[in-house]
Image (cartoon, rainbow, N blue to C red; front, side):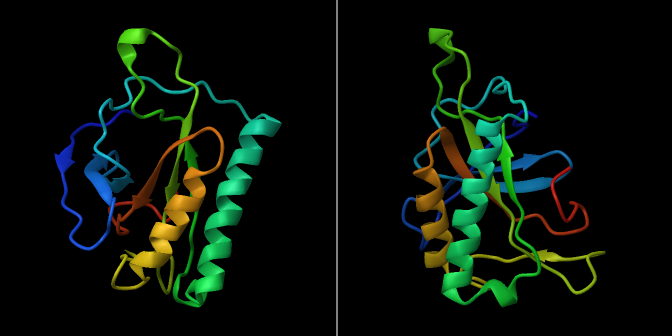
Amino acid sequence: MLVDEVEPVTASRMPHGPSFLSPLPPSRVVYVFGSHVKEPPTDVTPTFLTTGVLSTLRQADFVAHSILRESGYSGKISQMPVILTPLHFDRDSSQRQPSCRRSVVVRTFITSDFMTGIPATPGKHIPEEVVLKMVNEIKKIPGISRVMFDLTSKPPGTTEWE
């Protein structure tokens, strides 16, 4: 999975907000948090279902869901998958070092039937402060390159990531 297009995005109210909007197949709209991406991923981090990889995913999932629950907004969200992707951003490819970090995608989703649905938009369905707290806490997990936020509706996207 490589980034097809990159467009700049301004985050009007979100400090250190999303640095770019990236359509990913099939028609995913994903915001990447942090400073401007200097080096987009050119390859993927080799990833196997090891204890360490699963532990990283479990940590990110626990952090995101704990923050959502503490905020009182978990009842307003139908589903919130937390996805670990093998994308290592900002790795200088000229140094020829292997990719070793991964990124996390948070997908807050609202639906009544799981056949169609909309993303829970920060500032509209979920406070921006809650999303930023998720991002900042997930970034503290060792081995995480970036945190992304999926704002794809269904259709065209799927409820989960496949």
